[in-house]
Length: 260
Image (cartoon, rainbow, N blue to C red; front, side, top):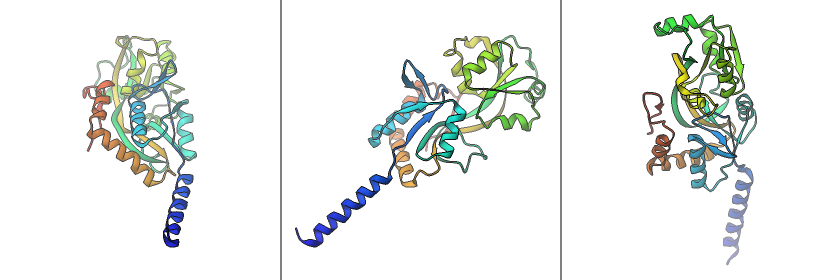
């Protein structure tokens, strides 16, 4: 092998080594937010968890996922590098804090009450929201949807660390309604030890698209690898199967983002 060829191989190896040294693996984190992600008997489950596992397998990457209280998970991904987080609502105040990797689903935000609650039951939507304004409303700590409440003049707002806690506050009478993403709060009812038929959705206020997102510092080249892996899962039918598995294809309750 002549000197020029040896030099070329040496330079190529050095470049590859530097590239690998700079490429830190994503550390996936989330909150317990069914049907997108939760832990059960030490196992991670949910639509986004299964999707991340499938993409990781395509890319030959680690698919470990750690769960934290939601507010902490959001803060970690916003302030530290190399984190992936889900399911994150894409809102104007978050737009510049994250890299928005893959859209999951569009959801509406609803007020959930107990079945025997008289709160604005027979009113029109706007009237229901107005009637709820004087009530005690619980929401998930770290969620930007609290701004929807504040914009409508709600002042009696209480935080919960997770949906099971919010459901306990609701059933104990500590709050009059929960304000949350429809699929997340409904999917949390039975795993939290309650019966779905004991609750009612009063009305909706606002919506947003949920994303799998990452720390802002993720290189675009790395982001594109994950997006390409996702598109391959769209083409081979994996995404559709997972949407069906977790009931995300039921348009009357959920509104999946159209896959291009």
